[in-house]
Image 1 (spheres, rainbow, N blue to C red):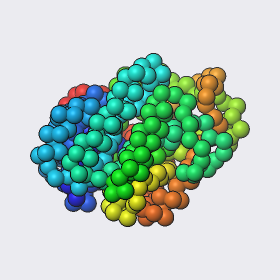
Image 2 (cartoon, rainbow, N blue to C red):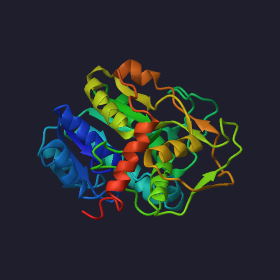
Image 3 (spheres, one colour):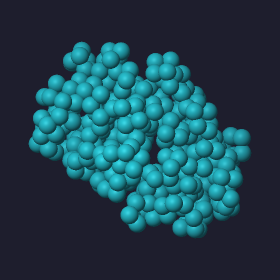
Image 4 (spheres, rainbow, N blue to C red):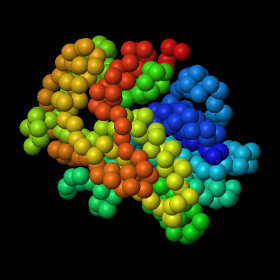
Length: 338
């Protein structure tokens, strides 16, 4: 298939572009590089054997999108283009509403105008808000506890409404739990701007000596060791799920949400210990007060994705830690040094 990947230079998008190329799909990347680095394109060329067709395009720019669709006959779109930091979204909600929601509206309008009716959307488990029970399946109540989660929920609703209005429109929303790890080559991985918002890149930077210690929020949760439990998924498993979703779109009617997770939880301390084993480094940490809004454990019921896509995770926590540490070791400053 000929696929437009919006946000294809970002963390998950770049890994998905590699997986798509390995399956023989033709990819065009559209990215404004606000949360990604142009040097990733050279890394993608090394991994796939050909320079990616990449355009500096913001999905809010209707004219630029129209020109892109006019120059290609795309079979489908994969939409990653969004701001994604929970804390930042609380400080800059209007930026998140503008970029994520307005950008999705503009993209859907461009797709309709070009008669491209197949979409895979990068959603998030944040659409479940504070879950009442685990594991979480796709029928769990939806809510949001922060502006970022609210944008993902609205974006899903917009896509669902388009599918209802146009029965020929086919869409899958992939609700990720906690993506971690990197490509096993160490050439591409997660390169956060500033202080990492997520646990794994923070652990990586502590191990590399870039941060003094890890802060663990709460040591008295009702879990195996008192620390919070989350569902971590290797980014390469996540990338493969996008390929499966793309190739199954023809069998979808309307809008289909699917959870992507391992279906089991790992505590903060369990992840930390696995990373110490993978890196050979001790990770200093300090347990501090719980954060408002946190819950003891969150993990997915991914059985619907396994049933409908024929997909399930293949890589365990040891692989997640090993590949994350390889990326950190080979790229101590992310893509900045290239």
